[in-house]
Image (cartoon, rainbow, N blue to C red; front, side):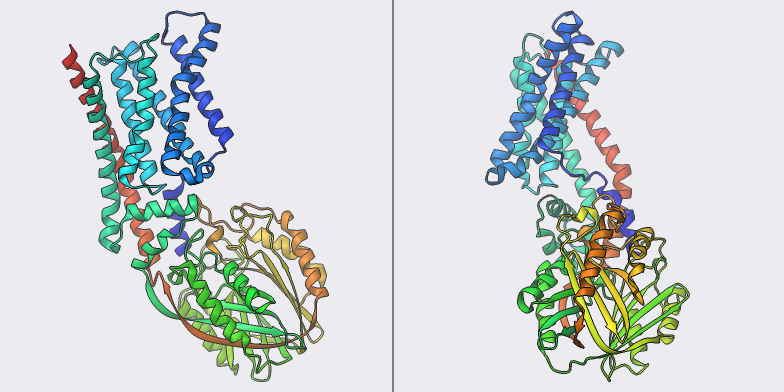
Length: 613
């Protein structure tokens, strides 16, 4: 249910896209301005009635000088004023704003000329140029204030640069008299009034957006939006402080299964923190699989597998830095070398669409259980239902149980709720668990960082980890990818590639890391942005290395409680619902306010221009 709500909220982010390269932006600026210059000479006969070739070459050159040059100068000045220390990295964002503003100016101005010549519109070209300049200020102000998080004073000051340069170029290009100024004072006053009207309209829309969120959560939607954009554009963490205001301190658990070699060295561990690896990007717990595994490897050595526990978005951590507390608690549990056993039992069962694989350790049977409905899908399992499943395992005589969600199939949603058919299938599958093999425990592991893949392709920084167990004479394989779910066809292709290796059980698991979620689409499962062919060889090679690494090990499971700040019960869904409501309102009210402000600004320009008559 949570993922579907997030998918509906994705409409909010459809306009966010990767900023084009410098080459593409500069090419776009030159192409648009060149075309505008040609149109001014050929259609509107600016500068007389030149031949077509003259109009094309000289008109195009004029367009580049008149429109492209001010845009380039404005972007350089804006970067120098606001981000001089990171000029190279930041300049393309300002260049993008300049190109968009230039395109809006050209479109507005040419539409004005068309209306004057063909519709006998009672206005002057100068008034359309002023209206276009006011639009440029609004675009620059909103872009600097929201996505790039600059103060309103800096945003307004820098927003003036481009339109002032643009109007100055048109005025100084006297050969064509594109902008006529009879009174510089009145010209400036007209520009200020039109700009003020549009800025007030932008402020009104922001107030409408801000009010519901401010009332329901006590936070500024504008500030949160600005920090959200900053996170995507610059990887900023400022939004975490805003989320902390709506979050809550909870007590949850960290479970571990440690595996040691004959000499007592920690070979590997399974770590299951009962937190959700979200909400998105680099925020909160989104990168915990990579952060926790790296921290444990640095302090303990070995290979560490971070699994998705039975938790929902209610347990999204607020602070990314909280991974240190989880890592420390896991390290404490893994550091205790007492109580390890070499005896193990492998279990498996299937009921309806639900499948359970379990590994139990020692005579007191400490259990590690993994659940899936693949190729069918359910939402994340609520922590209370996870505890119910754990208690059901304990009721079968196990002394300890750690439960994970394989999270390996993306498809039609089915709520995992108490009383639902999916949950009862899970209960029945736990009751039907049957022994597949018993004996000495052996284990092999392999790791591939998959550093040549990106989060946009659905692969997080924790990469790929493979664990192969041999219990008695039978082998079992877990393939863990730092990803957020997988398409059923993708999963089946991977499993088919591993089927010839003779495993009693093999499946892919994902961490449900929201670091791979993409803006504009939210969900980014394996198979969405990367083909299985690109990963088959890497996974197969890693599995082969894990098989070759098999050696006798001892194991022990343990868990402990930990306190951590999370968004809290229903807060994510409430926030998403509020955002969806705001979007629904702004879709109607926003265009109305913007259209009304444009009409009002244009009427003000015409009425003030009448003073000259």
